[in-house]
Every structure is written in C-alpha cells, then in structure tokens.
Length: 344
Image (cartoon, rainbow, N blue to C red):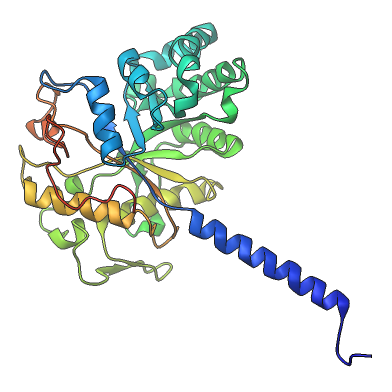
C-alpha cells in the first residue's frame, strides 16, 4: 500500500491542471483587434479592390464601412477581412417604423455578404431628431437578421455613440449617461443580445479643447508614468484614451450592464487642418493607440478592439477643415506613418 496516495485527489489535480492549461491557451489565443475605417468623401481615392489589397498587404483584418457600398462589400468578400457596417442615420427612423424596410435592406445589403460582416451599427452619433427611433430600429434589424438563416448568430447588432453621451467623465468612475431615455433601451438591448457598445473616442479633441489642462503627453500615450488617480477606486491613468473609455464603462455599470464590452469604433489624430494637428503628432498617436489595444484600460484590462480613423485623407469631407486630414495611408497605398502595428 502506498501511503498518502489518493486516487480522487490525483484525478481532481489532473482536471484542475487541464483547466489551467485551457485557460492559459485561451489567454494566449486572445489578441487585440485593430481595424481601420474606410470612408468615401474624396475624389482621389483608390478603387475598392485596391483598398482591400492595401488592407491585406498591411495585415489589417477589420474594416468599418459607413454605408453599404456594393463595390466595397464585393471587393472585401472572401478576403478574410471582417466588416463593421453602419446603417446610415437617414435610415434609422424608417427601420423603426417600417420593419419590412429593415428586412429588405438586410436582404439586399447584408445577406449576400454575411460571411464577411460581424457588426451592424444602427446609426452613428445619431442627431437629436432620430434618437427615439434607435432602439426600435435595432430590434427590427435584429429580427430581420433572424429571418435570414439566423444571421443574428454571427452578426452583432449595435449602435455607435460619441463621448458627448457621457457626463461627469472625470474622474472616470463618475461617468454616467447624459440621456437615459435614449441610452437605457440601447443598453438593455446590448446586454440581452451579447453585443458591444460602439464608442467614438478622440483624445485629440479633449486635448485641444482643454485650454492647457490636458498635457500633450497624456493625450499621445507618451507620458512616462501615471498622470492622475481616480479618487473613487484608486485606478491610475497614464493616457486620456483610457480615462475616456473607462468613463463609458462606468456609465454602463451604473445601468447594471458592466459586462457589456466596448469597441472603439473610431479614434485618430489629424495630420493637418487644426490646432496641434501634424504628421509627427498623428503618427505618435496612431502608434500609441494600436500598441495599447492589447492592454485594455485600468477598469477593463485585456485585449480590445479598436478602429483607427481613417484609411485616407478625404478632401470632400464636410465640416471643419481638420475632418479631412485623418488618413493613415496615402492614396497610392503607402503608409503615412511608420511603426503602426496592426496586429499587436
């Protein structure tokens, strides 16, 4: 008889060891995802097929499209690139009030390309006059996906908001949604359907609007150490980006939805056209945010999904001049900035 041998204990140990191994494998297999937004407001942009080739040659596996352009969707089909597709703002009210219109839109623009699409965002920072329709439109789009071989199992329905939806963003733990009648139905939908919240995050605008209260290093991921500590939870912040994203995490938690993940649907720094805009600063920001994606935030550490804005400068984009100068590639396909790691 062998003293101290316990068959059950050994079996339990082996099971525990297997579980630890599987967990470690899972952690190693999980990585950050970097995508790039692909807009069309320019008269000098490459063809969709050329753009897809630029994505592939640079190892960019995710693309955001702001409307269902058949040429772009066709070019991306079979490329291995995953598409984050917007339902344009001008369709939101229509889809909320006319479910059949949502079905027809999905049939025409989503079903033929379903293997390439992983997100449908119903609206992008929707204007005030259509806010009440976002929640119902999301429901009708989801139902439409389910009518086509349960496409909702592979395509997550969501919406995109900006930081203007968060009030009391400092300290980050104080963040809460500014318009609960708008956000509560959205948050409930996301939680019930396992979808992420899409958030446009721009430390650039926080920096230039801060009147000197935010340092450039803090905005550009170049601070050598923590800049601020959240007094409510002790979390330390070394960059503006984390503070902004965590204020949204805090807002979700206050609505009982702290488990809803956040995908950064846009982030960038302009290379011209505004205060503190320039290629040197822009390159620093894009390198920093892409590298940082694998670490997550103080409240939610771990690999994240981030979409850099944008693929090209767009010389016909409306709005302030700075809006035309966020491109990270030249129109001939060469990168504007060295060292951006699209697979951190």
